[in-house]
Image (cartoon, rainbow, N blue to C red; front, side, top):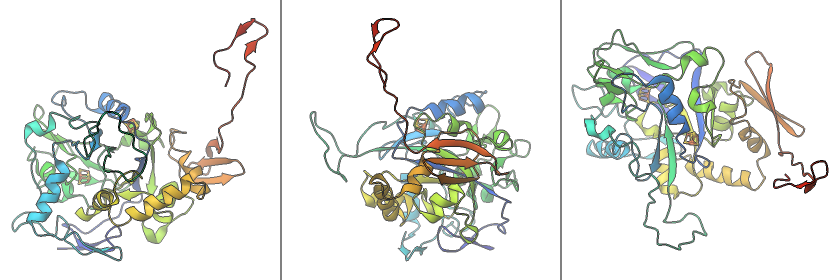
Length: 382
Ligand code: SF4
Ligand code: SF4
């Protein structure tokens, strides 16, 4: 089987095909410290892409509460159980993953170590919402972190992986990775509905449309990306937790590229379950209120550094990072570069044109408490 280099695992991994690198790689960063589970992203995606026949229960973007929420039911618990059954030890040594990926651990005769959700597993996307890890008594005050009472919201889309299991598993070669941006798509003309992608994807992001008889999934809003615009779930995010861009491999890091800065330079944004070996391209800034053991399993050994860096930023010790996070939700255009200049952080498009200029400190203007012209008292003076 061909070998490809997976920088997230620090080693070569087995993959079904020779790894052909796209010209650039679509990536999204989500700051989990700020998601409020308003589901605006979910509805923005749903109304844009999946309101057709057979898509009633389909959410290409979903937001689940961890540790008790899942869509589909128990997707990551099943993943961990499968790895355990296959006797995969999820061990890291000095940033190198020593265990097997889901392709390396595939049973004889199969391409990927996968599992198939039941139809009803997709029926309760909000299961476990707002449930904490431990019960909370009325009147409980949480005054320190980490705390046994915790939860956080995890928004999920297709990771547009560098070595996708869905693509590897498809017997029809109906799934392809676009050369121009690395977005992974299912060709509806070639798909015959065998659902091997649904079984193979460790993140359970392809979904079967029973009416049309084919698999469907997040398309990275490619028609928008082609026009230099970020996807719907990114631009509509109420919490301003998301930013989309193009990420480079570690040997081509551009510190002025927002994705590279957050993932490679500051290492504050991490891939979800990197041990699957897919090299997923949605990166998460982990929540600092969650026990580190849970974060290590979910985001790999970089979790400690990411949490510490974020905490430092909150103390004002990471000004560049703090400035960059202000760009989240500040423009609908894809930022290719950023820079801090005086009291502002600026974003630039591919040609170097300025997209947006955001003040580092939000200006506060106080108005007099009374309006002399109208002779009334103002309710809102700031
Ligand atoms: S998240 Fe799943 S569906 Fe998306 S590219 Fe990766 S393996 Fe394929
Ligand atoms: S729109 Fe943003 S804040 Fe709201 S649920 Fe989605 S990711 Fe979270």
